[in-house]
Length: 86
Image (cartoon, rainbow, N blue to C red):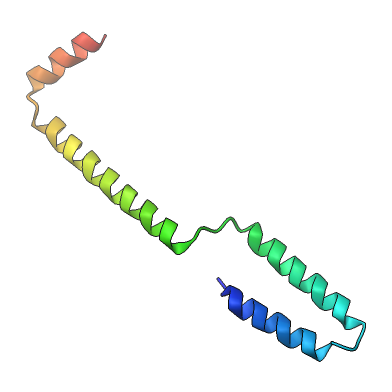
């Protein structure tokens, strides 16, 4: 993903090059199209991604612990629980 400052720098250079020409409108349109396209990518900030990755890791750990507990139950306990659930 391109850094927003890189996009701003690129837009600035294009603006300087076309400052006194009708291409100025084209530059504005290109910048607007780029911003619109990037907005539709549905990106999240890196910090939010890291938080969600940690939540997923903890959830996986809990699931593994529960699977381990379930595997330690005796077949008799599992059969009794299954009958009670019906």
